[in-house]
Image (cartoon, rainbow, N blue to C red; front, side, top):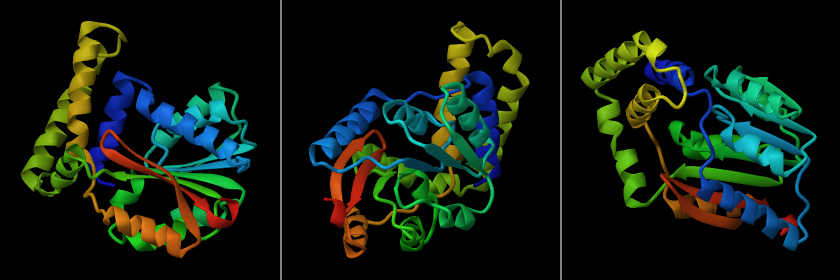
Length: 249
């Protein structure tokens, strides 16, 4: 992950401590859990969140399902923010910012694995997907940069993301925001709202380069490894795909 992305998170956290789950994401997750119950597919006991960010998805899921433990992973210190958030809700959580391969090797089979948006940052998509299912999690929530007009525009920003001039400009803007945080911290104030809109508008430009397979290729990969598509929906910039082990369908 690039340096601008880490700085972006530091500034974002100072302006608004937590991001919120969107209503369409919440509805999709709730509908998927209901469908699992209707199909007599037992919800797993553990939740693993790869690229947890500030924990907006895992904290929501943790409020719906009494997981024995929730495991968080992120390369930025946003993972610590997610840990704080989940613990404040009384959830049993373990956090890692270390080696991803080690973290994935400890994945419990009786688990839901969340990978929301993060897989797109890996150049070799099939290799990272193979690692994700190495220990055979029962259910995988995979959200990849979508195939809608907005999703394609977001992916198309790779040209801008790779520009050194743009990167330096973004770095300067983040530094300017950082210098003026004292006037932006009061939540609900007009200044706070202005700074929040400004920092959110920078996010598409600070992400690392986006990689993506075709939707059919994601589906074919999981089917070749004995998973089935259980649910799918285009939500915002991402296509959400839920895969369940075939023997559990």
